[in-house]
Image (cartoon, rainbow, N blue to C red; front, side, top):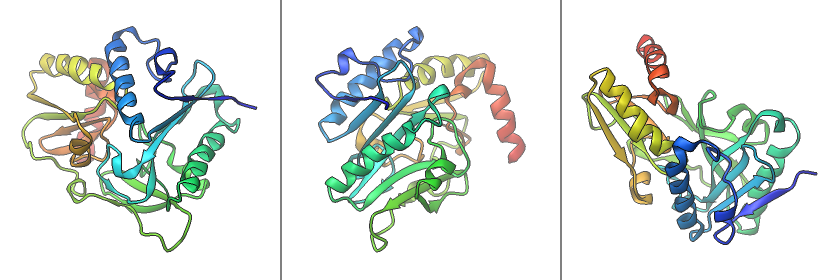
Length: 259
């Protein structure tokens, strides 16, 4: 039977949070994710992880205070939810999901909601797996994101994306624009360091926007508030590896071919 650790204010300084815990270059970003979690714990945010040095964890909290542009009153929002490597197919995902289910039921919520890729996207939960667990698609966006819901009562209202994310555009229509938050321990390092170096090397105009508050994230133009890159006002990707010099050209060329 797998054992899970509940991360909370009293133990977070002594526990790892799964991603980037051994990545020295992301040490500052890792610390900022912990600070972000400490603040969110005051708003009933929840973090469980497997009792191993592994990426096996779930994060969730009230949708009303989620750092995402979604309207979902009386739902719990699942944010990061990940089971990696050898820990797959061992019941860990179902066990973690059950914790969120149990909390939602105890709190008399209408259900669970989460943002995913319409097809599997980087840094997002496995869409197909969640559908097999009883989630349903309640809204999809043309540029690749879907909103999944698992209702406890069929008559409960559907969650919705906020209007500003429907088009897949942002107001800055020239050059590269990055949006990010400290929801991920990789995001600040790669947005502020790797992306700047990559853009400078290619002489590309770059604007970086850090979403510093819940309100800013809820009013963001992207459903992927961990990290999103836009080119000339159009959404390109939420794959943070595009920040790296070795990955930028490959990912961007795929995007340009689809246009």
